[in-house]
Length: 287
Figure 1 (spheres, one colour):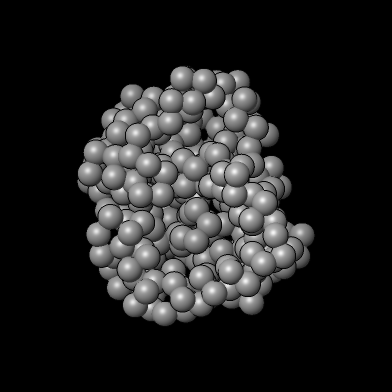
Figure 2 (figure 1 turned 90 degrees about the vertical axis):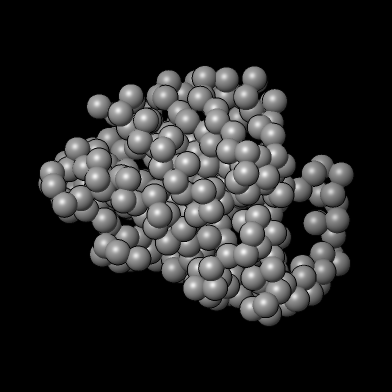
């Protein structure tokens, strides 16, 4: 990963982020947040489009994931995560020119809920939102929540993680299912060790499953900044069609695009298409 890697401690929790600067003057400030289970290098193929457009980029690992510190007390609530991450951006702003600036927010998966919370908390500091495969609803259906809350679930989860994460070969196959094709081995090697920290900490993982996706989706329609949402038509995690509830009820003001051949991680597997949409978005909405 290019740029300067840094760590900041907020309320006793260390958060890892990278700062990538354009070669010329800074025209925009962009925050790229990795979803839980992913690392900031997942955005590496999108960075050139942003730096060429004069963007100062901050890429951040979600608190508790990636190169950020793992802890039994990592925040699961989206609103609390949002406050932590505004702390990161405030630190970057004050260290650069002593002034708090406006940030275009970009995220993937359930991290999209975090940037939505960031926009709700400080709407005047967010000129736009850019979401890839947003996971804004709980991944645990209501009918299955009693199983997740049961005494037997931590043991079940432990066995699943030992089988699918501890084994590099099975982890690559799991990523292949998520990506839609075989991932780069180097990327799999970066992603697996942080997830291994949850083996033996199944209660933390259970809390995250039950709580970390919660967001007041009814408040999305109150966001006045422009938003673009890209969805993978071959997404095995969320399904290949944009949820009607999201498009028509919860966030009707957003601009939606379906990438028919993309899985859950279009910024890696279909970066050219994502960059094409982003280029037009910058030209039309940021300048």
